[in-house]
Image (cartoon, rainbow, N blue to C red):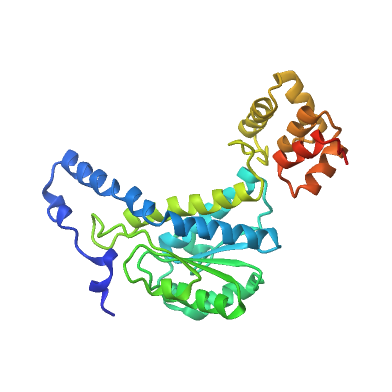
Length: 304
């Protein structure tokens, strides 16, 4: 195994003497290196857009989105997946994260798990992964056997495959329908891909899941209208969302939310279109959950 060919494993001349720097010099070097991440992502925006369009189409047709990775890459996938239900009111099954070594690997490294390509196949089968689904294989180096095994299996099934790597000539790029490769360069601490590469991966995953949810009608304007009000902060946010989305006062927003059983999207539609909860639900069902389309439909005189 020749790691010297991997961008993420090369030594960074900018930090060659970081161990003898002052603390301020140390963090200045880190910040200067981190500033390169945005431009690396900017170069692949067309590919990210393609990935969002393709993913949203799969999900609209009953598919699910899976993230697959090892170590930091796997944890980032799990983080992104776990934030979708409270933010967008999605079923926990819709977006899932799988990590080499399973749940214990989230908290403590499971040595050797990432070297087993068959383990990825086992994990995907265990979750009923099918041709309708989407697999995003995440590996900073682009060569993790666990991720390679998963992508190969997904391609055999006919699922949509997306590779996310931060190294030039990433092996997983050739195994995917869409390759996302923000090349962030050598790390400040050689090989520590939880730094620039991990940050780039997090930003790309943010774009991928957020863009997909927008396409699925989970956002109205820039309001998260499918937010799940599962705590006091989110209950207050739901009230503000209804107020912002409909232009109504707080009292009316609270009343509408109560009538909509806490669903901000439905409450906005009830206020804006002057429909009942049952009529609003019918409109949203006809427009596949897209609020703007439901409002237009109601304005055209259709209530159910």
